[in-house]
Length: 309
Image (cartoon, rainbow, N blue to C red; front, top):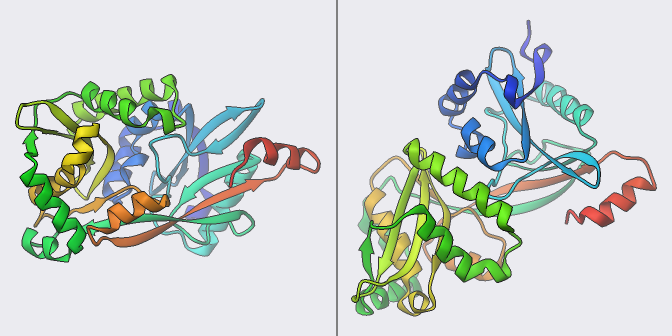
């Protein structure tokens, strides 16, 4: 049977988790596609499976306004298929997806995945770590190097003595007023980080001042191919000490010379993009798709309510 003739969408509870996660690892998918990651973060999810798990694609489900749609949950950047899809396979996959859900709002790496959908280009920054630290440091902007010198002079000290809750607590103190996350999102985040820690994917790090007080807490996920800068936050003193620069630089030093990429997980926010750019990463684009197949005038009403772009 040809692969395009064996495409099915299966509820998460009905998937063969071993085969699914083996495909994620074997085909170098991003970490967001692991079943344990989706279980922790998604409200609900399905898996699109071709053949005997030769190709997979996670489909996170969200229910809003009485409607079931496909939508990216918080703390997931993309839900790509596990391999590049030739046009004849892609068309079958797309047909399955749009017959499954009338509203699709997904982020994907493929710039041609949904030809009929609205599309917005999103920006990610990645830094190749497969070289000596000195050569990576030399490419940092002069401003970045200056801030790292300030971090050293102002007493930034690395510490591994922290917990998942320390990271979440500092993040909420720093950003909760500006974030769209609510208590349920942080509960799911804690669940995700706990599972990731148990499975060995989580890398924690703190920055302390010379008195031993924590001025920054952060974490990255490590799937052996990418380091994902998932979460990090300084205190006000940490900002003055340039603790975020220090944390990222320490992680770069630790993993320099390994076959990994540091994935900054964004960003299209100008100030954040400027900060990430100071480490001289490469730009990696991905694409935000929105497709609403409900008839007029319901389609227009839903678009106004959902405000996709």
